[in-house]
Length: 265
Ligand SMILES: [Mg+2]
Image 1 (cartoon, rainbow, N blue to C red):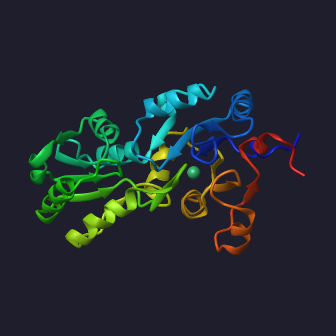
Image 2 (cartoon, protein in one colour):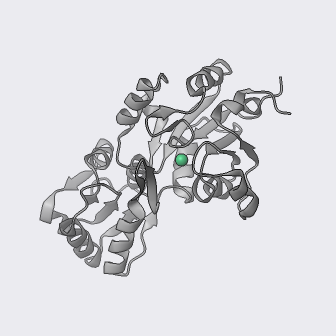
């Protein structure tokens, strides 16, 4: 049987738009993961959303009938924490503009997180979108960066889909700090290469790796920059017409995630 899944050893899998839409799994998602497991494929879930921790995502997938280990999730928040660790800087004082989930990812790699106005003395500022963003956080981050703190953004996503429309993502918050300081951050999440480098380090070396995602300007562009095979699903925010129009061309376009397991024509 000539199936797309047989062409690769490892899969980086985006979550929203691929595995689920909001709280609904995409068609046959659980069965597709069973087929991937049966074929001995390795997987890592990769998402730009820094609000939840890996544990939170594992719980969400379990609820959708997809058992997963927290170690199989690389959020842009965890990737930012692993980046700080890789740079040997977890001992430096860190201010986090973001959710408790992002703070706990930083603390999980041994990062020392400053709270409140102590954050002005931070040597590193890590920024991820969250619903309680405030002027106070903006001010503390701005002052710390003015005083020389490194500026790290989990991602630059402009928005994310919610039932009543597109809610502002991390990008607008990063932009506010950028405008206030005149400093450009190091960006970790898709489509930047850092999150892919960190992800590939979590697989055994040498396998054939593909990314499965629903966004051309994030999953597919990032996968191409990282030299991976790219598989676009049409179950999320991209339509076939957008692929035809766009300059970014994935290697494969499939209707939804379950098509990994059906024979190629
Ligand atoms: Mg997505």
